[in-house]
Image 1 (spheres, rainbow, N blue to C red):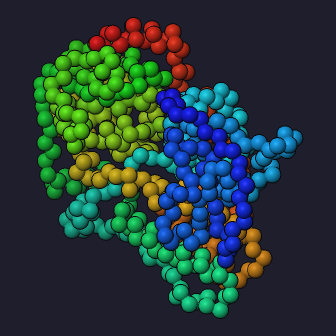
Image 2: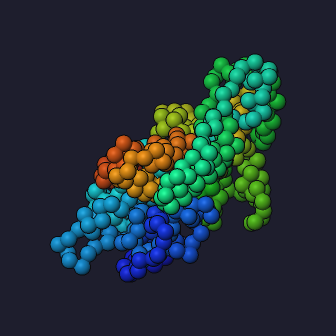
Image 3: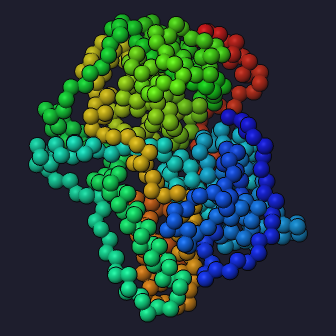
Length: 490
């Protein structure tokens, strides 16, 4: 992945003091995000939050309370005219959040950062694919289907507890004698925000999200589940599809595909940009561009799908699994993150991990076994009977960077207030309640002191620590890949 847009470095601009009843918490984007600019004209806050939060232009970042950096568009940190002074030391109160949506290997290559330690001791919060981040970026999540919950309750006579019990909110006039416009406005905003987020979470995850059913419970449900219908093209030929557009990956997936494709009875068709460049075998059917549900229709012609990531890095599980892999038509074969990490994040029994097999020959043998044994094959599709998959079920689905930085900014202001009245304590708890809805822990934010620590990114998100694949191929290596691998995949 290379930058296809001009690098953006905001030139600091003076911001005049505005006349407000109280100062809102302000957020600014120091970088663009994949070339897209976010500024004061962007509609990022809902009507309710606009009463207490606002977006500044990137050029006004020095005046903002919270700063968002997208690493893919990052060029350099801000400096001061006096080179002996440190911008970060001068602006210690600012909360800086780093957003990294790619693997460590690809992220730093795209940003052209050779020394990861350059990012150390600057950021307060992280948003990455690692569950240990403040924001765990996960393309989708899963929940138990409502009809399955009904079966468990009505057929198995087991009880399911609801995810959320309503939080007690005092009447709106509880603090009517408090003269502070700031506290009263914040009370109204937080109460509405808490209610709205609780409602959204209880609708998306009425019982639980990203928590699988036990093996015993699934076994007890078997008599009540409808049969799974799967298409068999040929018992002796294993049909596999692969959608791929990055032909020079760190993970070595091209070599793996070539070796797998060389096994007797294994037929792999390649779609995407790499297919258009290097072609593939004759494809049985291909839906026209723009056709709705194109991938689902295409994959209905295959028994398996290659969900091969471009990097082998910790918890690097992307849309290749969550979107293409969980299509419900073909069983995904995954390569990328370790088995233990798939077991921690992915839907159980929804994938085949290549690391479970010591050799490619063993994997091919297992694929042939599943191709000839429908009952065994369908075990990998049973999740479609049990779970729904959606971006609304992800671990941080009800949180966004802007509102989170705004809430934390107000939390710090409230914490710093000298008055220790009931309303202040109430508001501090309300903000904590909002983050408790989805069990969002924010490991880098200390709720007791309302402070954060500066993060050593080189220890948290480093390809030398978090990845076990090869560095990006050189130009010569890429040419060799083309000659020795892709022409064989022709």
